[in-house]
Image (tube, rainbow, N blue to C red; front, side, top):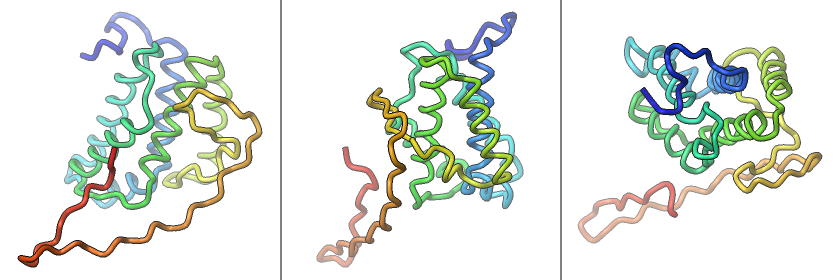
Length: 185
């Protein structure tokens, strides 16, 4: 059992429940994960694998302490790796980063700002508006990079970025294509 989870005889705090509800909604609305589960890309246990991801995220980040504050880049990498390994699905649409940003936003809103009711209500309203299997595309017009801790209450929504151009493959003298990592640090 992770150290972030409450002991078995302790009930979860309201904040832990709010965080778990937020992560649950975000995973429900994520089209890539929903498609992977619905089409059984993870085998007959596809739904259980999704539940495991939810449990893992809540155990790791749902305690609210400074030591459990998620980092957007690390969380994105964790989510992408999990989906790739468990569902044999390579994400090409930055949706894992979007989900990670919203998990970080939920964590900050609930555990640091004491606005758990507001963020859960916002996610639930978005879920009710869009139905399941839709990412929260217009949910936060004032979304900000929660990793830097700055707040801009009514900042305009970022403009949609143009699709990234695919680079031409690098082929060595033997005719083999060089594999370039997706993320460089």
